[in-house]
Image (cartoon, rainbow, N blue to C red):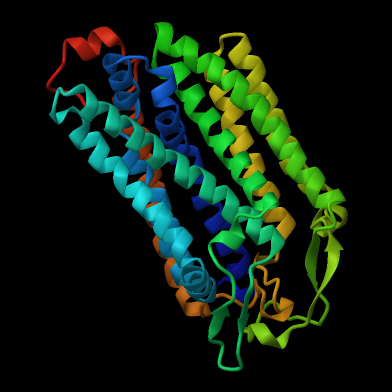
Length: 380
């Protein structure tokens, strides 16, 4: 039987896997929708872009829903503090995501040009906003969020939505936006042909370069910009349930580099992110769409692992009261809850993965303008 400490680590890994799964799958359809107004020059070409992602987007969002459910079950204090303090940002993301199913279903209901162009830009905004906000959120985790717990463990958030849009937070948002748009561009390279594929290839080259520069810039800012990470300074038993306020925390981790110094192998993550971006750039230049998609996928894995390794064991640092910061060890549910959820995850996550792969296999192939023209009523 797994001990409590091991369960805490397993759930840290599982939440990370779910977030990576969401970024890898829903990331390319967010990126493709963000590129649609630029790689599709007319109505038929934009319908081509939509039909490469419309059969998959709702299944891809299962990863986000599952990650949210896992966060609620495994880290209830994180869920409570984040969803109350960051309510405005979360609502902005949700309303942007609401636009997508409506846009996919209603865009082609009318043949009116203005109607369709309005929905095209609505889909663009519905992809742009979440892609940017997700990155801003990670950037603010590295900066620390202004919340604290009282003696009754009631959280109070002292910030505002606009405070999230700090220069470093916006840079992290650009990392996320360029990364997901790159992923969408490499996806369109694989699933389209002709002019759309060519424009997607050029967009992927620009976005890969932008991602590499932004990712390297964010790393340099963390190291050289005076951003202080946190470190637990009190004794801690990871195998017991703790009150988050029972620990002492100090800002003695310059640039969040502590884990990279203690565990040099973790440096593989940022290297993987940079090499993935460069591989996508090189493969797009050489007209190798599958390798380019592999490169953008590696960039996503490397970027998220870089943030996760830097923050560990913190999952929600506090800039207002470091002792209130939530960690893997003291923000979790009971051992019984983690075991029950682990059993459920062991059964259902592989099922979701197998079903997702089966859907991609059955619907694989290039979407062409000729195919759209010959199926005017059966496609989006």
